[in-house]
Image (cartoon, rainbow, N blue to C red; front, side, top):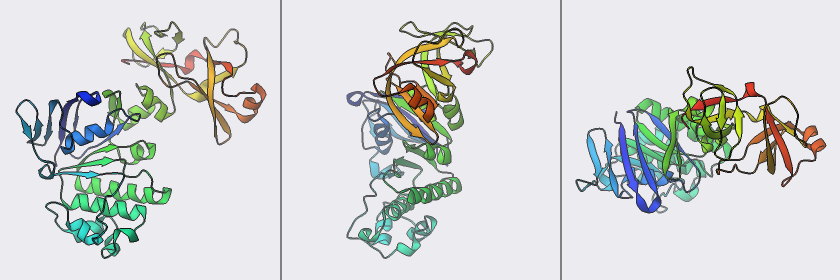
Length: 350
């Protein structure tokens, strides 16, 4: 098994990252469009040369800008699976899998991805899910040390994506192969990832276990993915967080003793009450917001406010359909979000 170490600066794309992937680990890379996620994969694959940095796979140095080392893509032993399978239309399935550099045991890998019965078909005879399984077999037939996945399930229907996840999980666990997976789908994170890295504006906003990111995110994107409200600011160590625009949030720290300094306040949309007029007395956390959108979520309506003054995702509240109708909520309306102090958790280190 082979681990991966990456330190890369790509100035033109505003990317500056440093991270490691342990041998046999699957790292999910998340972030908004244009954050630099695919650039990071392309640096590892050798498709993009960084302006500064080092890429290692196990004991092998693949890129070292200072020393002038840049191993060619086809010699890196790195497999890359994209959203587009990029199968050769004039070749059969088995020929496509055999075409991979250093391809070994193509029949075995077609069997491994449940595609042995497709061996003699041409790509035009395959469904989207079948084509992606064949592309995965081709990547694995080269026996890469590291597998890179760039949103390979995007565009597949629900059933095909579920099948592909099962195949990926089986292959990655059985082979103990390190993988870096760019995705936007929470199901990919839950079913495939050991750790999660969130990239925002070309830099790592947070990195940690999938469970930690989904329960206690520290980044705006991580919070929105997890469905949790996040407010950034400076904590005083005693349960108060002050935002850069002068709003105070009150809650309880998740550590004791709690340090003063950068922090985030987290709370669930279900804990937010919505009012037309500013409520009096408890709860202590009350902010005036502008409604940006409403989204039906089963029996509840999610009310999303416009983004916060620092550009973070807008706060969200879950209310019943009856409440939404009674309040006559609509985009552009000004309302008050209120949250009880005991519903807010403050985490140090924003």
